Image (cartoon, each protein chain N blue to C red):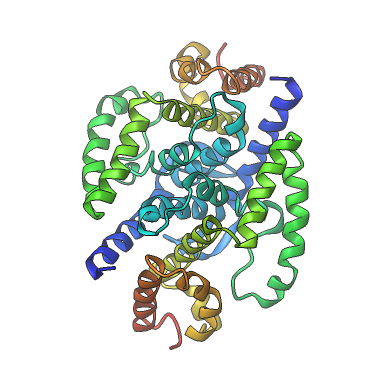
Length: 194
Length: 194
């Protein structure tokens, strides 16, 4: 392996450490959750639920997208699902970050990772949709488990929450029954306005 | 989906959150790294380096093992690679944890996850070896990047470190050249005794 190729890999992989310091809206224990541990939790959901969907998605494809889907947040930050002002600039910020971050890698590797990120964003393949279902389920479960301080702060209603969750519910089993059970629990515990 | 199946999934996936609080020997920023974010970082390495090995491993298989490989630490804790007393009891502690944790899932799902964990541990397939290479590379890179306080505390020598790293070096490219470059850097910076 040529030294510059080796250093390109090491540089990118060392920089990726910063995703462990990108904070999300949900809590874990007595602190905010970060995007790196979120991505692991989403991957565990995908592995656990992979045989609950039919036809079965290509898991290599799904798990690659999940590992990569938030890397752009190293530069662009996490955007809370109900931060309307942040959402307006999110796409532009993330595209600039993808350009710079994947550009650190050898060209064909960077292109492969960027394609995977774009496939997740485009939501056109069964794998991208399954990965999205796991991503939304993780975000929702994490909020319900931590008492959803971020939802309570903005008085989130079920109707507004559904704008984000409906695409995952529309995937059917296993997402729909799990998310519906979590809605019931969230409303019962006063975390969401019915 | 039957309610008890749904609740088994939700219970396991909520419990998995605890891996975000299992601390490892390496640091990230001004705190200890946890096993959940480590597992994400290992997955990112696998995706990034997947086409550097030949024959190319099955990535679904590799990334499933990586997502699962540390789940037993929820109960058994992380064992520092140079904690000889801990290593003596590690296997037994982790087996008991696997029994209990994967046992929370519907039987055939728990068996599939447990098989994946055992495949990683057994190191008999190309996929398990590639996953191990990424795991060792992540642990080593993370120590070098954070200034390796845990290595310095025990005065770790290169010879002793190689007991852990040689299996990854033996995989050849891309692991050998990257790890060799990191050894040079670590010794140059006084993190390891030559």
